[in-house]
Image (cartoon, rainbow, N blue to C red; front, top):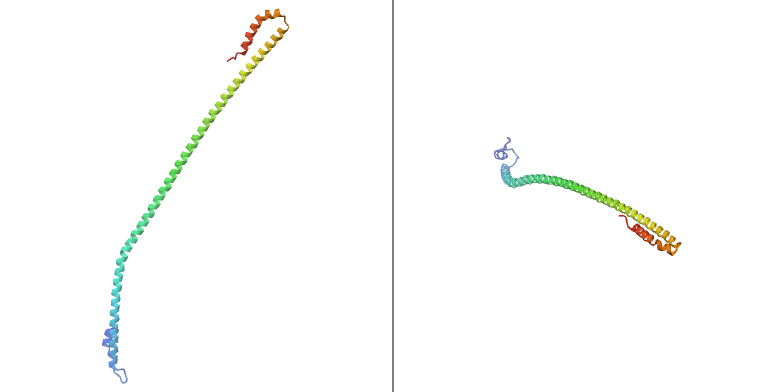
Length: 193
């Protein structure tokens, strides 16, 4: 037997007849049924292959836009990530600029306040020194007044003592001198300013 298309082989099959062999009619009938079954299976296979091709074509038609959408989505995702990185870098950079500007402003404010405090402290020290000078001057004036008052009291005491030992005629005669002494003691009372 030659190998080839099984249906052709079945159609062309010719068996030799022997005694006590198979009934040729039954064999032919079996071969016909086998051929029909093979034809039926081939038709079913062809139909299944056609359906598979159509399903594959539909799948390809549906997958094409899905692949395009996926490609677009992946490209958009890459763009979005790049944009996100750019925005993040800009935000980081801007935050650094703001932080640096704030530090500069803070340092300037601290330095300005420090200078202001130094100026105020210097003014207060000058005012304190001026007040001390005024106090020293006032103390000198008070000491001078005290000295003048003490001198006037001493003069008056001597005058009173000398009047107590004189006679009334001497006191009258000294009236003129007392008047001069009173004028002199009055000059002790005037401030020397």
